[in-house]
Image 1 (cartoon, rainbow, N blue to C red):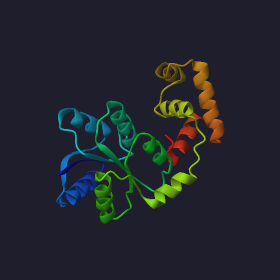
Image 2 (cartoon, rainbow, N blue to C red):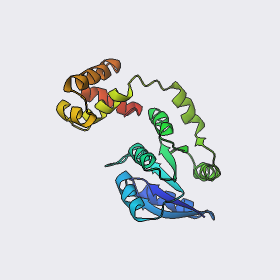
Image 3 (cartoon, rainbow, N blue to C red):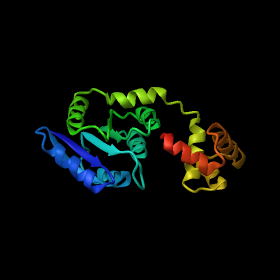
Length: 201
């Protein structure tokens, strides 16, 4: 029996997915969480599931942040990401964090089930549409620029960002200026908006 933790902030979607998967003979829903922080808390108190099926855009801790924390903790669960057409930048980031599957939220239920069965067998599954989009995705931001911009998008000032990243304030300003220029944005807020739309943050 393969145990699955479903992480999704929309309760109707979360319950529908859990109900659908529980109908499969070889799947068992271990738990349901509304965001990545709930999932981390749940994992700290329960047996590690075989699969963590997670949305990306959630409050408190996103699906990508969750995947990053799980990778750091070396939790053995296979992470499967649910995403939408509009965020190709998410795919490369999640791949780098060891995600085993990417399933479009727009896909039908049979595709989700068959994808999870393949992942259980050790395969990696990426929806063809998402794979094509990922190939066309050209994120111009460096890792450091992305980190600085993400913290700026969270409302942190230059001084706070510098402390978080162990950098000088001048270096942080340079990273943010580079990001603004590369994205042809008017300021750091506009740059963060553009990067989020692309799935780069």
